[in-house]
Amino acid sequence: MRKAVSAAAILAFSIACGGPTTVDSGPTQSVEYYFAGTEATGALHVHVRWVQSKHNLTLLSPCVPQDQCDIYAFNGTGVTELGLTQPPFVVNLASGSGTFADPGITFTVTTVNGKTFTFTGTVATSGTQVQMTGTLSGATHSSSQLVLDRQP
Image (cartoon, one colour):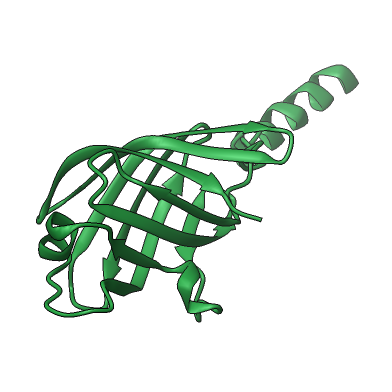
């Protein structure tokens, strides 16, 4: 009888608790750094600085120094894509958020003048070198390859 009661108690406890839970320990890599890179057409140069909470990314806010959260136009196409009309040909980022699935990463940034860009790619880490490789796209920018390297 004692074994039957113990087995029944264990079974009832397991059912009531829902069994073992899955614990998300987060990604094995970190992207909580300042990154910069120029997309393949040479039109846009992107600077982003992420704050990471497990798989969730948000743009550093406030972003200080500000030049770690902006996009530069490197040619006439970039000026048009960013909606700029006069120098300086740089626009600050107003917001940014994303998801880091490790190694997959997706994020969206929006400039202070309302231009939104999306990046989808992967992250690779080797020692202190961290690199994001993927595609940048937006309403005013055709998809192009973008490599973002961790900056010192």
